[in-house]
Image (tube, rainbow, N blue to C red; front, side, top):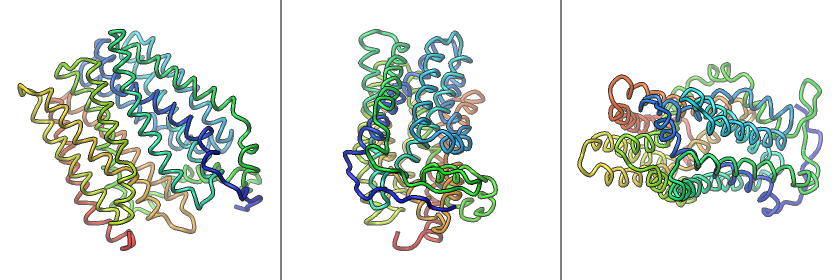
Length: 421
């Protein structure tokens, strides 16, 4: 791959706020508002608890399905256009969901939102890769993660307010509509990125096509994923599996909490409020996690987080029929938020640590595929366990996996990650 132009030398943090951070905040706010109410709406449409969990899982399933084609799409239509079309497709998914006459149609709408999320996220990553110099890129990506968590903090709080005012969980979909429409307008009304950042650095691909460096990177990450998984099977089967379990427990949290609230009879407004407060705790810790990893090492963030998630899920699984089930729910939501916040950025950091320096993109794509598979698979396991036995069994199984993940991290990260990390 031949480099054709260099990036503009000047860089200002202010220059990335509007084109990257503001759209991310708006998109995350819209999506975050939906997370607490998906099982509630599914329940209102007549879905069983297991089917409600399956519908909530469709966001993660959509992201997994879109992992490979998203990189190709971004390289063909560009980062900015891909973000716009991702937001448009998410908007269509919300409109399908809000008008859904049945759980099946609701599931289709949520799946569309998941697909759109992958496109938007990969395009946003490509944008920062193209226009943010390497010297500032790690901080930009870390800040981006914080902005995303901020959206997931504010979104549920807005959902709680709207439900309290209207008495209907369905009205929360219109928060998402507003968020996604705002994303589209911001991206359409902004000047061309090259007018702000200067000429984008580009490379010439073997086919002769000229693309930006960010577009080239995300396409390389999505190309040949299965051959990459085989080539790096040793490290990916060990550390990759551990990272997949981190993603699995994180995704389980977003499904289990609203599903559990439905099961024990907590009101929709209170559910959204509790999840929003937990999101605030998660948001507050994203920078602390980075400090811990840089100062003490990756394991000091990852292992306590997995143990905390494991303890939280296991404890929750025994509280369903207790007299104080609602109080236990609040306590466990806080414990899970603290644990999740402590692990902020650890998956991306481990993938960067392990990637071959001469050609990191294919490895990063394979690593992301494994972690997204974990995120998509865990909620499906919970749904299946709920259908076959009980929600408590599925939640307890996630707790056990937390300890399995902690063991794998303890056993294999020191073998593959340089000791200074």
